[in-house]
Length: 477
Image 1 (cartoon, rainbow, N blue to C red):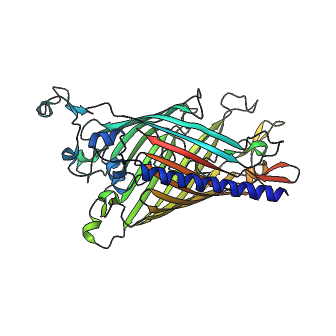
Image 2: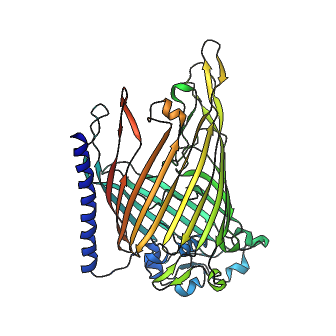
Image 3: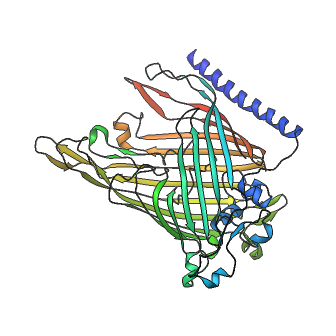
């Protein structure tokens, strides 16, 4: 009987999802068409779909726009509909350094807002775990203010701040806030954009962004932290997907097909520095353009019957992160011991394949933290088994129509330490997340995602899956 009830619940969930989709199809067909109006859409009087095939994910043109300091890759001046305010006469360039170097700022305040909220339907949770309602009706997720633009030919900026997170009255916080000097290598004769510099608080140059992901849930491997629990001293706050505070140099010569970056960061996520040592992150990638027409390959984006589309391409990349975590700085975690320094690293590779209306991409990562065992009787630290994990994700996207995108995603994390600390039934935790996203407008979309999760223990020899699905809205203005 219990299995029947579970089956009925799953059928009801999918019926509700499909019913909502049909309702949205009807809504789209009976209302007039409109364009999105975030900051860049207003500046250039263009649709959000120019840079986003499915916002906030960037298409090829959007990537080129971002890399060019939030300017059109070619003939930017001819496309701007809101001219910038000039901060000084052009003749001041020749008189520098006896005068302030001339610059510019956006003609209007470059502010946009983003809101997202989700309705959740959860599988039945054992009471011993805690009461989790089966449904949660449209909980606000984030309300974000975004400011971005350029201060002239080679200076660009980005600031995004979550005014609220997870519900009314909840504390928000700064996401990215940085200033970037584009094409710094111009002054020493390097190819265009071969050397750039940015500093502030920013998401690392990740193979796939989490801060601006299309998915309503984050990548499991990005959120994996190393904690030994009762098995040693390791207690590392670093998570791969969180923004960091630091300095980054990098470049993307050869029309952006090759990308490199080196960042020096605090390694304490968005919190203040907890140690004097800094971490280093290195990433390289190479994109292979697979378009047959040489003329098309040389353009920023290929032209399709409905407008810009991505090139057929294959991108391969690798990354490495190294740091030295400082534990027991105040002597409270392990009384009687001095500060413990434990080296750690993350290493991995990634790929992305694009072909017309189809994308397939994924990432694999290995994490390793040194782990020590305190001996209270001798006051010494012995070498314990390191805290390690492996995992990654794979995701496929297919555009059934320019405004209907189907998604299939698989997340996996293998962590023997988490298993021994009771996080899952096995070393491996995996999740399958099929979904569909519908662009009601270029700046408004609905999101549907089902999540089948790993088995979690809740009693002696008892396990359950925290399955569920979310229905969300996401829009910008």
